[in-house]
Length: 123
Image (cartoon, rainbow, N blue to C red; front, side, top):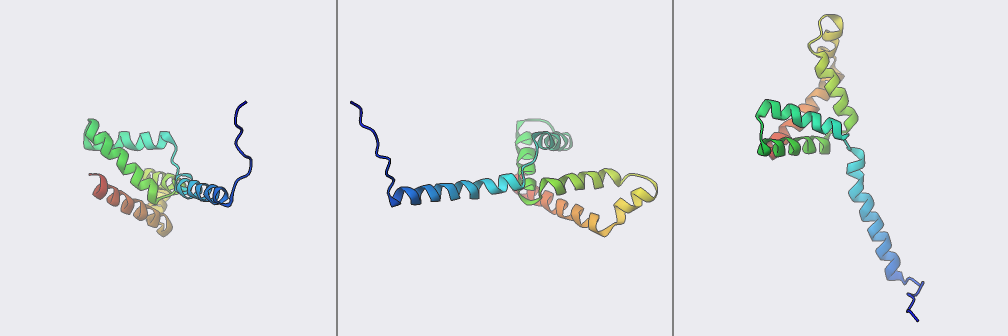
């Protein structure tokens, strides 16, 4: 006859369960809030490597860089900044709008600040 564990969980078991649940939520929250799709991370790393050279060390530094950026800027804002920067080179009124609109420029400045932090921490 096998010994069956008791179904009674003491107060310590409940407290431990609550603590573990809370810890899981706290550690998961930043990843959920700033979870970048793999494709976006790879695209950033490839562009970074094209600008900084090829090799494993550069790949590690570029991967670190996008991780630092992801800690500071939500993916939706990162996506918006990519669009803004791609529109900077457009001619005419549309290009002027993307180069001069204050709200858009503030997003670009926040991204550049995150890039600077990433450079300091990773390169």
